[in-house]
Image: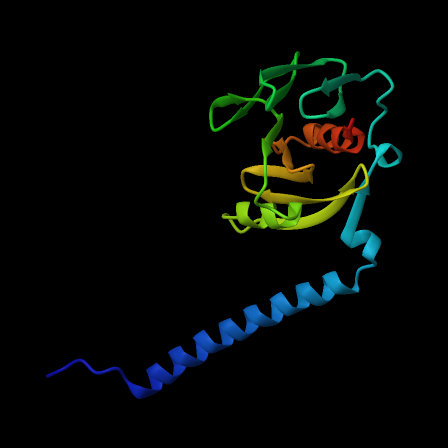
Length: 189
């Protein structure tokens, strides 16, 4: 004798699955409607010296002549250049860890990019962990930010180069420093 699925049970399973899918679709549509109803200023953030979260009067300035940018960083922090393309910013008085390994909480990486036409396109291709992509403006340029479980990456396309400013820790003190550093990021050419 073969095991047969009770027709009522089959209908119940199909109904539950269809209801769950419909509920998920409704929630997703509500998120889109909520985002669309926001004023455009809230959807597209502008970061500059006027929106800085912290007083930067005692901060130092890092300048990268090869890639043509400068950024302020806290007075008690230091930077390490692995090469002119990768700069690690670290607190000289505090260490940060991820999964047991010491990390640099903020990294700026640069690379040539002839392929991408926008920061948003580049960022969407990086979004392999289904993170949240938003746009903002830094130094008058539209940029894209990706937030996922790895951290936050803000990508800026300028003069056929991608500038990635990364925050690798969830520590809110570092978040405020990261936001403030981004607000001071400027191109020198």
